[in-house]
Image (cartoon, rainbow over all chains, first blue to last red; front, side, top):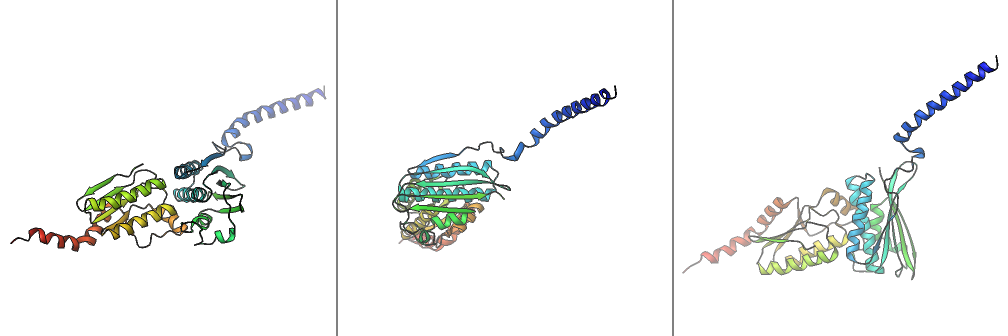
Length: 174
Length: 131
C-alpha cells in the first residue's frame, strides 16, 4: 500500500507535467521557431544570368526585393541595389556573360544579404590595383570594385587571370 | 522603356518613369541632343525622381547629356535625385561634377529661367524691331 501510494502520485505528477509541456509547446512554436534559424520566408538562393544591360536592371531589382523582404532600411536598399548594378555591369563590360546569386544570410546577431557575382571572363591581372579608386581598364570611371566595397559591409574577390572572377559581398541589417 | 520628352516653351522636360537600362539612357541622350536643335530649346530638365539607382553608368550618361547639351547651346538641370540615391552616389564617389541639379521640377524651371533670361531678352528684340 505504501509503495503504491507514492508511485501512483508520481505517475499523476508525471502525467501532469507531460500535459503541461504539451500545452506550452504550441505557444512557444508560434512565438519563434526552435533555434531561430528558419526565419526567412524565402531562404533559397536566386540566380540571375547576366548577359546584357537589361539583366543589370533585373539583377538590381531582384536584390532590392530580397533586401526589402529582409527589412533593410530604404537607404540600405539603394546601396545594395547600386552595388549589384556595379557588379553586374563589370560582368557585362569585361566577361560579357556570367551570373549573380542573391541569398539571405544569418549570423548569430544579424540577418543580411549575400551577393555573389561570378563570371568566366578574362579575370583580373592585378586585383589589388583593380581595387584602387580611379583604376579601370575599360572606359568606365574606375569606381566599380572599390565603389562596391564601400557600399557593402564585407567584400571578397577571387580572380584567376584568364579564367574568371568571383566577387562575394555581404551587407548586414543593422 | 522610352523616356517621354515634353516641350514646354523654350524648355524640354524628360521625365524618367521606370528603371532604365544602359540602352535606354543612351537613347534618351541621343533624343535630347536631337530635339534641342529641332525645337530650338534653351534648356533641358531631366527628372530622375523615379530612379531608385543611379550607378556609375547612369551618372556618367547624365553628365554626358549635360555637357553635350551645353555644346549645343542650351542648359541642362537634373532634378529629383532622391536622398537615398544621393547617399549611394556619394559612397560610390559619383559627384556629377559640372552638372546643375535642383530639388524638383519647380526648382529646375526657376533655375533655367534665371540661367537663360538674358538670352531670351536678346532674342525678343529683333522680333519687335520694325522699320
